[in-house]
Image 1 (cartoon, rainbow, N blue to C red):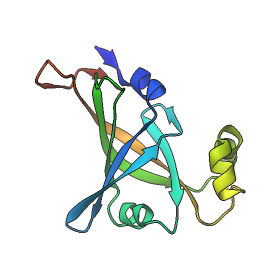
Image 2: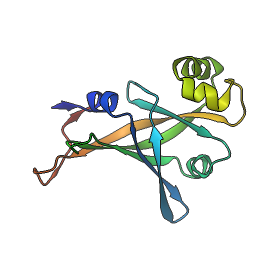
Image 3: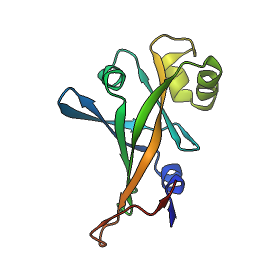
Length: 135
């Protein structure tokens, strides 16, 4: 068994995929922290990713180390968080978030988490996906 949390701690940046009507959109995003099976991110309320997730909260996040071993895919549903105490903690822990949004009550500051329902991985050389990760 492998612990996907260790991979996320080492490689918090990756690609988030969302639905845009009938097509898929991807963008590079940095995860903020993991709490249980909830992986937190933030975005701006004026970006397409926010509108896409509001319309369809299903998403997939993929990350990997430089040697691509393993490639990690996390699938689930997104929930937006409006709790100012949580937003304040995020700003206190992330100078980048604070620089971009300045205050936790900024209306364009959108904090959300991906509730991880499925974990998949691919390890080059093994040729198959594995689903034996600890959730």
